[in-house]
Image 1 (cartoon, rainbow, N blue to C red):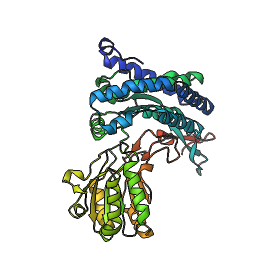
Image 2 (image 1 turned 90 degrees about the vertical axis):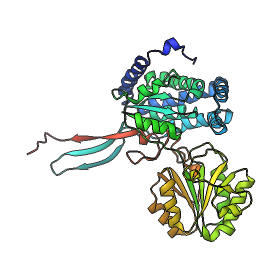
Image 3 (image 1 turned 30 degrees about the vertical axis):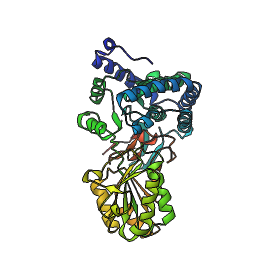
Image 4 (image 1 turned 45 degrees about the horizontal axis):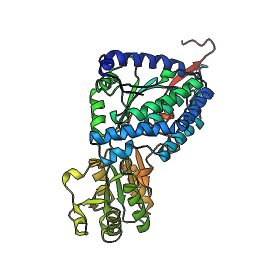
Length: 426
């Protein structure tokens, strides 16, 4: 897909209205598409991604050049980058979504009333989903596949830096729709880098049913501030790991290092380490040294600064998403001190407790309300694919409708089907 010229993008309102209108028409048709047709579309899309892998890599190389010229950080460039392994992951993700049970029409509950009415609550698509995201071209495939599976049309507005990669991936998804004789306009990519298109999308209440922002705090804050369309909030991943007094030493070392270093640029990367005072000189020392040895800059409180290599943490290090080889760390008096810290500085994304104490784990789970809470596991598992959803459109950190990984099922609402036999109300 080639960049549009300035002349072609001057009338952004008309461009976006056309996209919205086509998406709404496609959504009406896709809402009752047969499960077999949607599965065929996704399987064909996966085949197209496989076949066009060299073209996708070439497009991604252009995006990487653009990103470097734009001054993207190493973490953002890592999010942007595609290679053969990541393309294989995209293909596997699409196929995993294809293989899932179709959520549309599933009966959530049903019951009979004394008056003779039979009532069912069944899953139904949301309609048109607008997805606004930064850098990661794999979001293009994930969002497109999940919306198709759940019977929704989707309007994709990726970051300017992923323009070319996303263009080829959308072509593959639309090829799948054609192969299954489904409306191509069910998946559309906003064909311009002009930011005015985002503002238009946020106000398209006539056509769009929900907006899903996926990116940094600036993007999500802008969307929440300006959107007239309902929003599934995907806030920054200020993920905490708490090492309890009853933690296993070897487990703590392995989990913390993995949570920070496996991929620093994802929202599930650990950004803050909390250590119970009773194990600072034992487990805590070992974990901090392991992080430093792995190349992580540890920004610690006054007590942790006694460990060689730890640099002082400032007040702005608490509640900060680094997306880099940096972690904030501090000592807490007990589990309640850890919980209080997370409540104050967290983003309600993902928190993990490392402990062999069942009561401590239960207290952590009960008294925190982040979208994902873990015990003895790396925060890097905060991912729809790892949850068995095949893929995710994002991690919702709000409290309405969907929370945590948003997969195909979370992209549905429900309606009531009521059946009577000439039943009248007295």
